[in-house]
Length: 124
Image (cartoon, rainbow, N blue to C red; front, side, top):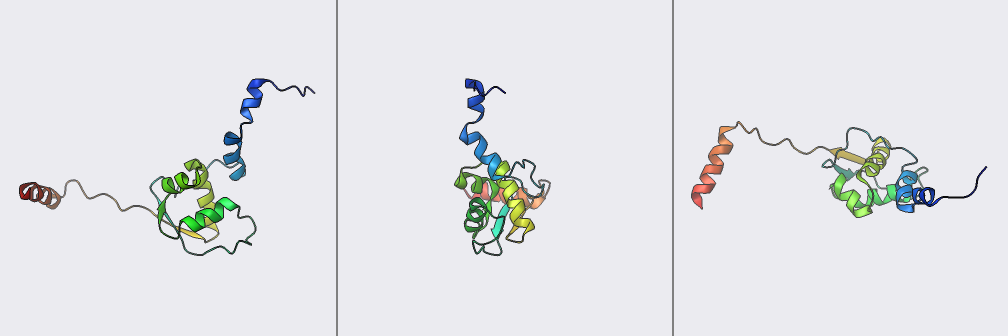
């Protein structure tokens, strides 16, 4: 067994690369219910004694006291969005957060929308 490390192998052990993988316990596939603009909101606070909840899970619960998008959570925690989606899935499954999908955009064929835009432009 060769215990000598090459520089290329050492680069693979870079902490910023390993940390997200460890936080998600090796999971990389998130549930489909969370995309970047999905809003997560805390529906039940943690006590800090729950088994299986890491500090990152608890940070998400604290952040989501007000509805926050997956992208915002990722930015606040300085984690990849994919990892945040995995963690949100854990919290959702255990009843700590709820997810809300953004409202669909207005029907672009709706004549009322065009009329409102024209009226707004005329008012300028």
